[in-house]
Amino acid sequence: MSRLTLARLAAVLFAAVAAVVVVVSPAQAGPADGNPVEQAAAAESAEVYRMTNHYTNRCAAVHGPSNVNGGAVFQIDCNPAFADQYWRWEPYNGSYRLRNEHTNRCLAVQQHNAPAFQIDCGTYADQQWVRQAYYSGSYLLGYKILNVYSGKCLAVQGAVLANTQVFQAGCTTSYLDQVWELQI
Image 1 (tube, one colour):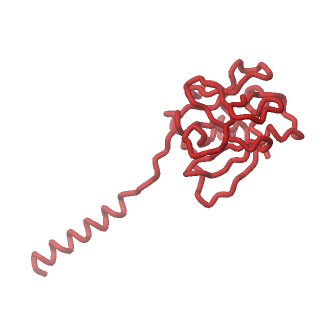
Image 2 (cartoon, rainbow, N blue to C red; image 1 turned 90 degrees about the vertical axis):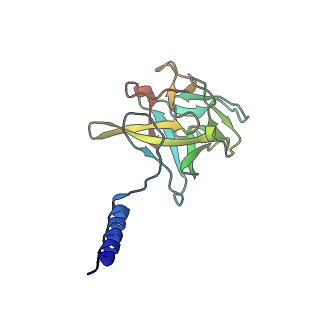
Image 3 (spheres, rainbow, N blue to C red; image 1 turned 90 degrees about the horizontal axis):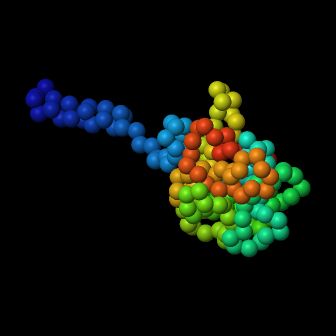
């Protein structure tokens, strides 16, 4: 074999090895605790869940009969008969929009430590959410629910108090009031 043929063969072999070694994966926004964020697949269908706070065992709901933009989202005693406690997780742009089954509006937040509210569903990042599995050993406790716009977690202010408003805060592994169970 000539030197030119060997050089070409070496170049092709190098390119083939480099192509196998390079693995492209999508970026994952989330807290720095090392757990992967679950992003919505494009073909995934919407699922409806009651979001129950792991620490308080209360559900995220639109407060009372409120059906207006800006209506507050609170934690209240869970009752499977109330549609305002159910949220449709709609896959959207690699994340989810959380649409309330009673009001047909989406969960949103705008600032750090700001309360969660409902608003007409749109394309804004403050209405987009991803979930991150949260384990105790090998047991799944629930999910951290992260806002795409802020990267912060949905939490319960006042922890165990009923009818306290849901808000967003910096994600941490030390607070179970940021862990939500998704119940059908």
